[in-house]
Image 1 (cartoon, rainbow, N blue to C red):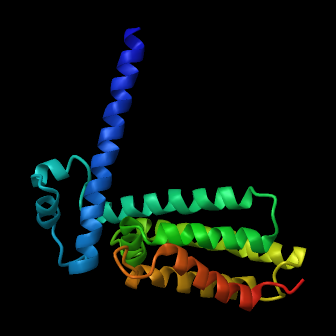
Image 2 (cartoon, rainbow, N blue to C red):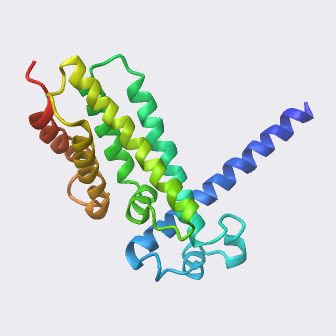
Image 3 (spheres, rainbow, N blue to C red):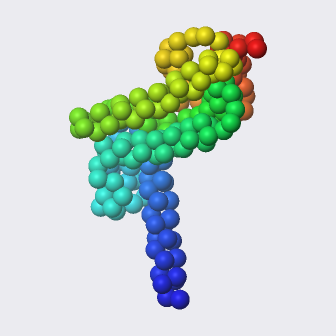
Length: 205
């Protein structure tokens, strides 16, 4: 009986720590986006989160670690989306369509916006290479979806690599200007992007 209580307490502590880390990352992300990564100090982030700097060190090692943790969140969410999309028994184009809708939702989140803006800016060469490899992996998975669409006839014959690069340039660009409080909602944004993609690469068949 006590084991169950202890497990619940441990789970609760884990959930609370994750929630606090998420809040810190969001405060840091907004500060980096508004003030700039290099002009934002850990003291600024601690003040925004209303904690002391030593308390902040309990959750993050330094500013670079914030970028790493934002990237980890991005990897989990984007690859998780791709796992769901590629697991569906649909055409290549329908999979690409589902990815775009899900990606728009992801890319408008503050943590992911910060990650996209500052990706690959780690000073540690190994961390920088890990960042680039993560993005190469995601882009490769999307290229495979496009190639699948070409094979099943739902996507016009094209160069999957070029289309994937153009698609990510357009989708990631959203992070620079989109605001949740703006006039355009995510549904309208997704619809406009899907319209461009449909007219450009969807097969007439």
